[in-house]
Length: 210
Image 1 (tube, helix red, strand yellow):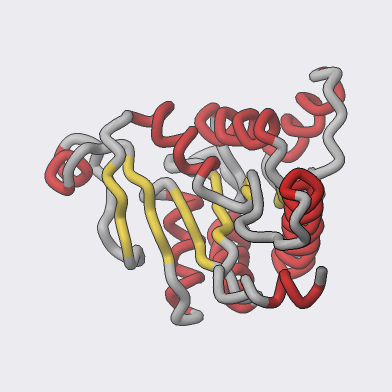
Image 2 (image 1 turned 135 degrees about the horizontal axis):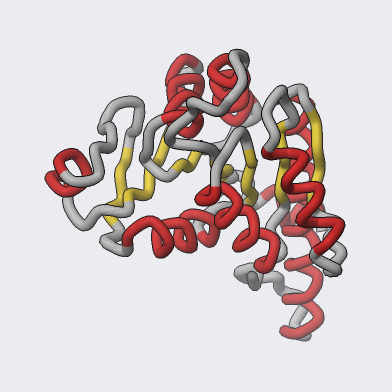
């Protein structure tokens, strides 16, 4: 099992940071916490994915670039021109921007589906939307606790959603949170390999199912 997983270590984890594009309601430390989260994603060997937007995700991208990491953005726009002129979204601090053309709600779905795990920072309704998509898809989720209300809203949703999920972790320390989430992703991938092997019946893992 371990030998097979090591063969796929070149496939770097893709970790999404979700958060508010407009951060007026976020706490004073949201900027530094978002940057720290982006830095830790890179330091722990992963690629950062965001919604190619402003605010919390942009700050995470800035942190990732400070560590010379790779940052990918999925835009709601169809073209670069629409991205800049109509959506008023930035081009900086992103190595690759994928123009989905599906608007915010469609972009949110593609963003979470393209990621191995999702981090939730200080956010608004769009962040909650990305959380619920990841929740329904069974993605590992890391919720960054802070002096904002988003983590408390998430806890309420989990409590009153009547659908247990063991793949959600909380922490106020970005380094500890990224470490916890990567461990959940590794466990998830190990389980996928096992399911694939049992289904295949050949003893060869091949490509893990998702």
